[in-house]
Image (cartoon, rainbow, N blue to C red):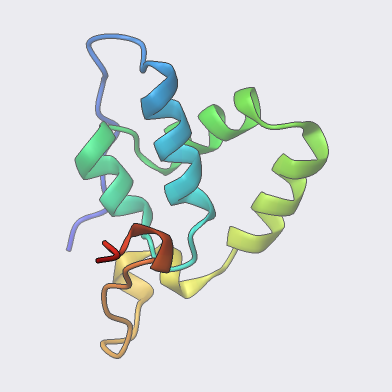
Length: 93
């Protein structure tokens, strides 16, 4: 698979989109490629968005957490890593 290329957004993301990108970026199992597909932001774009919207300490913690993490990069992932659905998104009946 080819490395994701930077995609240009035709407009600035709204608050809900920024919030969702931040949530996806913090999730361990969500690769940067998934963010690129949904929001048009490559890894560098996600880093810029995170830097602009997080406190400096939170951004530093996030970068330390994601740097070198194999689950954040589709090409480095093991086949054993599958899609994960968070409990707070499961419908309760």
